[in-house]
Image (cartoon, one colour):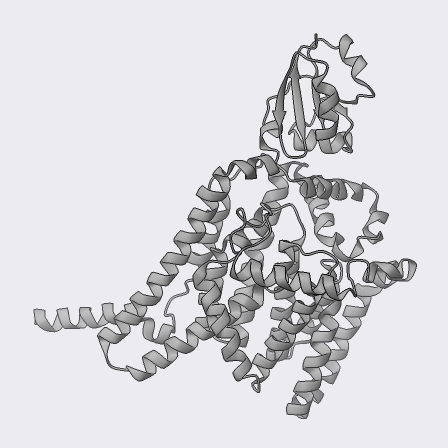
Length: 488
C-alpha cells in the first residue's frame, strides 16, 4: 500500500516538474508580476536625475498650460501629460514620477502577456513575460522619467484589445481598440508607422482569407471612427507644424549605416555608454536572450508563411527602419524592438520544448532533464540581470556622476541660488526634493558677498566662476554642481 502511494506521489512530482508540456495547471502570472515588482521597488530611490530626465520634468510642468499638449512634441507628449496629472493628484516629486513609470511597466507586462497568450500560446506568454520582467533593459525603462516605457505599454495594450475584438467580435472591444491605436500617435514617433504595419498585414490577411476580413466590416468601421476621433487633435497639430512628423528622421545613408552599426553592436557586442539604459558599454541583453532571439528570428523567417509570423516580420522591418532612419542613435529606441525580441525568444524555446516532450512522451527522466535545463537557463538569466542592476549599475561611480547623485542628495535648509543654469524654480525644487524652499536666480557672483551661507546650484560652466569666490564646499555631478558653505 505504501509503495502504491509513494508511486502516485512520485508521478505527481515528476508531472509537476515537467509541467506537462508546460501547459501550466496553475497561473504563474501573479508570481511573475510579484517578481517584477520586487525588481522595481527593491533598493528603490528617487535620488538622482540625468540631464534628459531634468529636461523631461520641465516638459511635465509645462502642462500647467494645457495648450502645450499639441506643441512640437505632440508625438510623445502623452506620457508627460499623464505624469502631470499624477503630480497634480499626489504631488510633484522624483519618487512619484518613477513610481508612475513602474506602474505603467507592470500594466504593460500584463498586456504583453495577454497579447502573446492570445496570438501564440500560454507557454510562450509565460516564458516571454518572465524573461521580460527580469530584463535589465526593461527594468531601466520602468524606472526612468522618460516616455519609452509608455510606447511599450500602449502598443501591447492596443494589440491585445484588437486581438480580443476579433476573437470575441464585440463592438465595444473594437471601439476601445480604435481609441488605443489613436493614443499611440501621442506616445512615440514610431507609432506613426503603425499604419504601415496594419496596412501591410491587412492586405496579406485579405489575400489569405477574404471572408475573415469582410465579415468584420461593421466592427472595423467602429474602430476606424473612434480612431479618427482620437486622432483629430494630432492631425490639427500636424497641420500647423507639418515638420514635426519628419523632424526626428534623416535621409543620409551614412547616418543610417552608423545607426545600423550601433544597433547591431549594442545587441551583440558593446553599446554606447548611456546609464539611463545600460551599464558602461555592455551589450543590452543577457547572453541567453541574445541566443534565443537570434535562433527565434531565423525560425520565424523560415516559417513566414504563417500569418502570425508574417505579422512579426512586418512589425520587425518597420520598427527596424524607424530606428535606422533617426537622426541620432539612442539606446532608448531599442524599445521599438523589445516586444519582438522577447516574443521570438519565447517562440523558439516553446518549439524546442514541444519537440522534446513529443519525442519523449513517456520518459520521465527526459522530461525532468529538460525542465531542469530550462530552469537553469532562467536562473542564469535572472542572476545576470539582478547583478547587473543591483551591483554593477547602482555601485558604478560613473553612473552616480551621470545621475548627479552627489549634488542632488545634499540636505538643504536655506534658500537655493541658481547660477548660469537653465532650470526653472519649480524644477529646482523638485530635483532637490524641497517643495517649500525659496529658489532665487543669481545674476553674478558679487551678490554672494552679502549672503552668509549660500547654497548655489549651477552648471559645470558656472562652477568655474563660483570656485573663484572661495570658502564653499563643492558637490559634483556630471551636469550639476552644488556649492554649500560660507563665502569669504
